[in-house]
Length: 155
Image 1: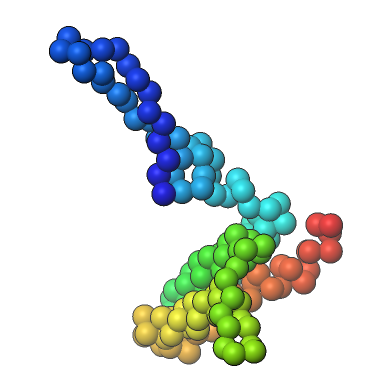
Image 2: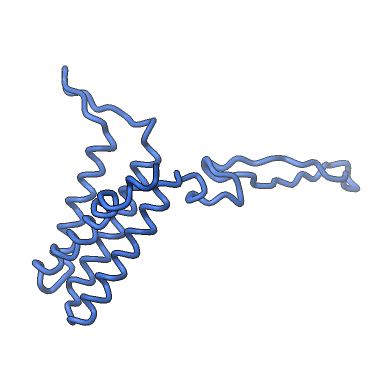
């Protein structure tokens, strides 16, 4: 959704008025505001620390010439960054899928479908699927390890 503001300018010679549209926001963010500016501080710290872990694993896999593991690690890390962003953005507002009496949060299901598709993608893309899946698992578990090791300090 693009919001615009109409600004009237001077009248032309033939009596028509020329208007100029200025974009003030795209979707829910105002111009000059990055989506990362609206993230909570804990999520930004989590992303920073997890990326540091991923860089260390990337260097280790590169030194051991495990390129399929590197590809899996990149897929897992990027997917988990996307998943954590989904969690942060949908914390208070998420849709509900109801199956009779059973109610399931829609974004919860979609997030786990994303994670499953990342494992499938890494198995398809890499030449040795086991290393790709292990790399994807390590890329995704980095965030859990960071939460376990550092989250008590961020309160």
